[in-house]
Length: 454
Image 1 (tube, helix red, strand yellow):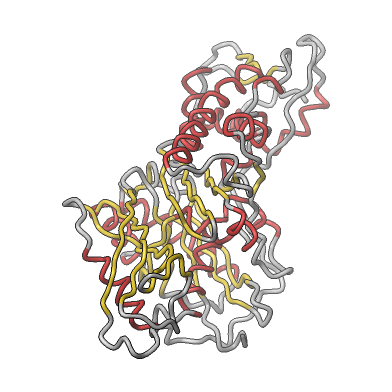
Image 2 (tube, rainbow, N blue to C red):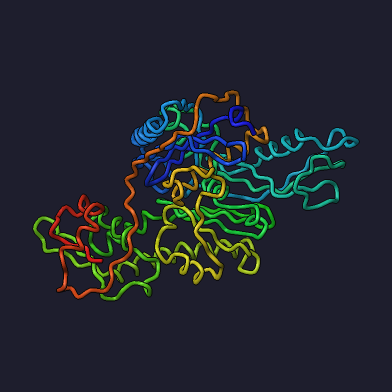
């Protein structure tokens, strides 16, 4: 593919904790080159749903401005947008169509019509169909066909996975995007976008579950024998863990988030018993000592609940450890928790690994985008290219003047993950350790005298 003939596609990930906008274009090797990247802290979104449109618009515009700052040549009009939230549901249907001209081979337009017919499927009032995904086709008595184009037959049909969402929630997303000066090219279920960014063809064939642990929700997509078998939105995410820490340890939300990122572990058994974090008291109150083990116990309880949902959904579709040879791929911001792989394998009985969104990126991508938190946004670009290459949508513009910036500097508010503090005697604190964490935590904890020990 000549890169000057291919469009620039922009993914917009409207998340609970952050909004990211990434512009990309495939090079001649079929890899994504990143042309612009911007992010902003998200306001107005809870559990994956846009609740405050005005705040969401401001955050989208800030992310767009940061994207333009990274590459002033960009001109963004259309975006692929991710969607998640408690309201997302899915159902299985089967559709058939008697062909008008059975003497000729099946054409692509007939398959498009068959898929389009499924959009008339009855769904509950107030819901709207987001996507219709064919799983496997059949032509007359021939079953389990991946692509029926070119076959002969009187009747063609397929099994479908239909994804629906609340009409008002969808309207809020579209309204926020349009009032930000953009057009929604398509809405894509977030776990499907994340899956396309972190999954290879081998994973698809082996059978794999993708768990995208976001801020407001954890999104699941299950693939088996090259087919999307199941999707689900689990109503818990990183924000729930932060709130559990806030309530359980009696700290501020910003302190809870910092402790989770810096010292959190998904396995309480791996946490040091006599390691502590010191945080200042409020309004002259004495400083508080937080046990790293107590912190890990709170995180493990909530992560275990999320993984129990995963096990439940896998049993619902009859796919257990014997079927999913590819195991579970963990991605999203929550996948960065220490010891999460061990907890996942212990809870589900499946092999687990972290899915990084580097599978389809060109070698010169910026280091920041290696993080699993950007899987959804990069997957949205890949979904756009799938539409472009299969002619599912019209792409009228090509861009020749925009090139990959030599340097893409990214300012990100996310604090880097450090190792947990080692076991120490509480009386043996030395000021020299403070320098290591000063840059990360001084803004949150406000008092230089309080020391975090490593």
